[in-house]
Length: 284
Image (cartoon, one colour):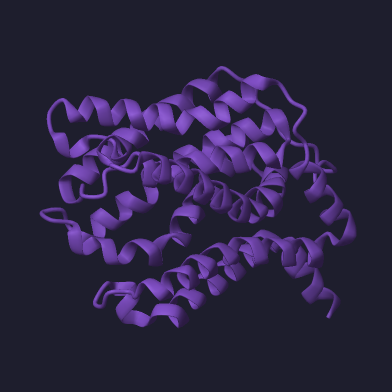
């Protein structure tokens, strides 16, 4: 039994990842079934809140359970302390809140010079105030619940063993994988792009790059609040800025361009920063 305990403690992040997938993927399957996941049937509006709820509960419940199991009360105290850490330089708030919207808006405006299909959603929406409030609310909710797990539990442990880039890449790849049931149905709109390639680009092009940037910001702030605020605009932009009708080649081109800019930004900030590892006794 003691050996089992050591095994689970040594592989706490894997335990967290597995639990996140079980809760989220299992919940989505129970909520909409295979036909809903594959897009073979339209999901009723009444089921959408359930779908969103089980999606967000995966990382948050898995994170809280993992912290309670592996870190106990000290881990929970550390979590809430980092969540309440807001007294940091104002520039980090700007980085967290503006990185995604500025890059996304810039790319869409550039692409819109060649096709009106890329006009930002907020430009074409008639009820802009409602869309804006809905987007901000959803972004904050998604950011809060997801980051309780990704940055609240997994990230500090990854940083004990890996560099900023390695931690961000690993967490970003899993972050993309976790989204898979939410994107599988969208491959029906892949057009001339192979569905498998389309899905891989949606899941793994820009998400790992953005997560590397998030880890870099966390490294300099140690604030879970900032991680929530950096996650929120990325999620909100999917509603506020990304045109709902782009798909196939258009969406692939946009995603690859977005990923390219983020990877370039990640390379610049990492190369300009001193290499730093978290001491073995740092974090929870």
